[in-house]
Length: 257
Image 1 (cartoon, rainbow, N blue to C red):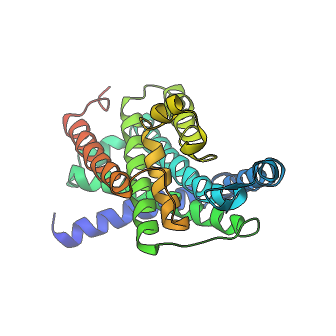
Image 2 (image 1 turned 90 degrees about the vertical axis):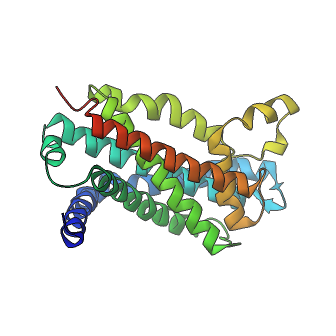
């Protein structure tokens, strides 16, 4: 394929992915906004008033970065895992695999769709947060970098989950039993310094903690971990999952009935 043909193929796949979730915005964009508003009412207003300040910030303001990034994680993952598994279930993924499109370009198209949904819904949640909290910005570059790398990482994770999934039930296993626990225990609602020593050490094993704190530092300028570790983990994770996804699609693992 010529570069122009590759661009047209990528643009077509990306457009399909964006239209897929934007046409049903009542199911894909509105629910996270409502859920976030409830988090602010329950955790921010009711519980936050009892907790007071965390790291020098109102509890309401402290949880904003984590809630935004939690949305980016879940939405980017959900978009790709459902889209790719749907293509596999309906057997039209085979048309892509036998087309002249390079495997890397196919992966990029699906991942870009997941990134688009993750960032769009994340922005919508940020607008909701503005009604409840005082939004801050410590580093725009870091905020964009962490948000983009996070969306890419979990989009790739969703694609790999879809490759191995053999039923629609398999699609929900990882979000339910892996992503949700890691996210809720990843410092979204608390600072690691608030935990006893033993649990602080346990928390440091959770990769989501580094991702959430990287985004929190970008907004508030405070973090429980090294920002270099956060960016390094994200970068290595994206490269590692891309190579794994590329191998799986090249080998046809999970795609051949």
